[in-house]
Structures are given as C-alpha cells and as structure tokens.
Length: 439
Image 1 (tube, rainbow, N blue to C red):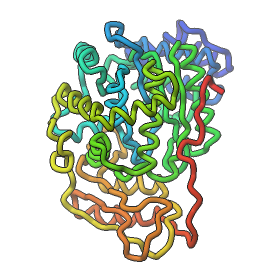
Image 2 (tube, rainbow, N blue to C red; image 1 turned 30 degrees about the vertical axis):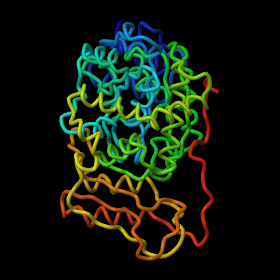
Image 3 (cartoon, rainbow, N blue to C red; image 1 turned 90 degrees about the vertical axis):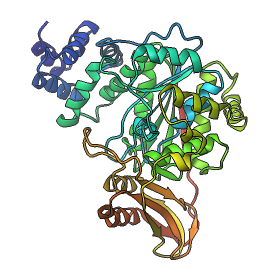
Image 4 (spheres, rainbow, N blue to C red; image 1 turned 135 degrees about the vertical axis):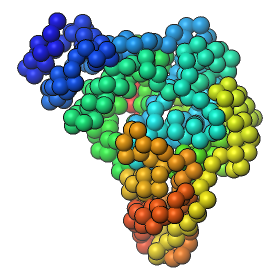
C-alpha cells in the first residue's frame, strides 16, 4: 500500500476502506509516513469530507494505533464525559466524583487547555502533588477501588491522534467535522468506555461558535459513537458568556470542591453540573430516568458522598488532600488582586466569553501554544454575572495576577467584554437542546 495512492483517492473523493485508514493511522503513529503526505491527505479530507463509515473506521484505526485500556475487570458500565471547551468550563472536576459516588465507573481521560479554553488537567494539577500521568495498571487499580480516575492521555493511547492533530493545527484543517469527530472519539474508544455524555458548546467562547455547526458536530459524534458501539448523548450548551463564577486553574478547582462541600455556586454552573452528572448516572444504569439521575447527583452532594470520593481520588493520585478539606487555604491564588469595577450603572447584558478568555491568556491562565506553562494561581472571580444590575463603581470581578506587568492588560481586556442595558436582559437557556441518536 502506498500513501500517494490514498492521497489521490481522497482527492478524487473515492471512499477509503478500513485497512487503508488503518495504514494512515499507523503511519502517523509510527512515523513511517512523512508529514507532507499526511498533510496532503488531511487537506483532501478537509475538502471532500469522510462518509459515516470512513469517520468510524478512522476513529477505530486511530484508537488501535497504540494501547487500549482494558477495563473489563472493573465492574459495571463505564461512562465518560467530554466537553468541547469554553471559559469557566470546570464542571468535570465536580462531575467525576459525583457520578462515581452514585455508583457509576468513571474513567475520565482529559486534556490540557489551549488558547482561551481551559483544560481539566491544568485545573487538577493546581492541587499540589496531584499526578495525571498514570500508567494503565494504576488506573485500573484506582478504578476498582473508588470507581473514578481522572488522567491524561499517555504516549501510547491513540498516538496517531497526537500527530494528526498537530498537523491539522498548522495546515488549516482543524475545522473539519469528520476529523474533529475522529480525534475526540479515538481517545474515548481507546479508553474502553461503554457510554459517553458530551457537552458541545456554541457561542462566542466555543470552538464552534455557530449553533447549527455545533449541532452538526453533536449529531456526527453520536452517529460515529453508535457505529463504534458506544452509547452517546450530547447537550448543546451556551458559551456566549463564561460559565460559573471562577475562571482559571486553581480557582475553578476551588469552585468545584466548594460545590461538593454544599456551598452555593452560580446557578448556571450548578445546573450544568447536575444535568451532565444526571445523564451519566442514568446511562451508567444507576437511575431509571434522567430526572432520577439528577436527583441522585444532588443527593450524593448533600450527604457528602461525592466529597469523600474527591478526597479519595486526590489521595490515590498523590495530591494534597488538605486542598479538598480547605480549598481556600491549600489551593493557589495569586497575590496581586485587582477589583474590576462597573464603568456605568445598568444591567449587565453581555460578558463576551471569547474576550474574557483573551484576558485570561494575558494574565497567564491559558496557553498560546502547547508547550507554554500555565499559572495555576491566576484567574478571575465573577462577583456579578449577566442579568445582574450594577451601579457605577460596583465590583464586577476580582482579578488575580502573579505578575504586576499583566494587570493593566488583563483588566482592560476584561472590561471590553462587558456591555450594559437599561432594561433587564432576557435570560437565555443554558442547555439549548439534548441530541440523541444522531438526530
């Protein structure tokens, strides 16, 4: 088999079979196909697309290009959650222990942030000592013991995805729906899960800003998951404004832990956390209906079972357990605090999440390229949210910076995200739609 022939086939929009796609995935993982040929094929796939079978076969081939987790020794249905990312998108930190506390096995493989979107691994690593690079034996032992493990992609889990994603990033082919689907689901298929709940975001701060495009992505993810025998559902959620009150690594971890303590957080954050948790509990067979799943999620928070699981998970992964008991003291917070005040009186109409994300990058919360370090201490706490009334001079947000040189830039960018209204804006639905069965 020759790569040039597969490039020509895709250029002419001739479907590829599984063996051909496996050849491409293995070549990407092993370095036997040069980058220029992989790039040429990606561009052909970008313009001509992949049909449903091709997308599923590419996903399977990418997953099988390395090791796979064998979770057969872990009892029960294995359920994971995936988000397409946004600003303040930290519910996973609370969801994993909530769902595990309800009795569902949760192997949650997560990623790092890039650009304005936060990464779950960066937030977890704000807990001193906590390890996310775990070997497969440790993951299985931990899953058997406490039903949950939050970990990063190893070098041998879907290695072709790492190569193909890096090439997509520099060849202008990131936005291809089939390639996005294969990238997301190859890692989930390699995990050995049975079910997947997805949070597909739309709006200013989302990867797919347009609702119709986000819905198409959700539909294609579910269709491909079904071919791969993974039960899946997708919630389309609004990312025009930041989620919750915390934006940053350590500060979002603190928000999640405080929720598990039973402390009141922002309504949108709690709504999404319980909605996603409830569906995972339902799909994991521990609730007869989705509403009952939400009730069980609320129950394990109220009786502190989820907090206990969080404590066990941090201990298993080598982290500072005192961060779970006293997050305000044992999670990092930058020393330079700037109060961002309202420039006029009125109702907050919008807090453009993409602009807020840029402010986060300016103060060190995010990355501009994959190898950048992030500042666990930096971030924003939103004292006010969209729909709140403010008087001129009221504090809208507290900004935490480690470097005084970042303060003015971060503050000015954040202020530019806010628009005001003379009347109270209409509240938008956070969960616009739940997509099932690829329809």
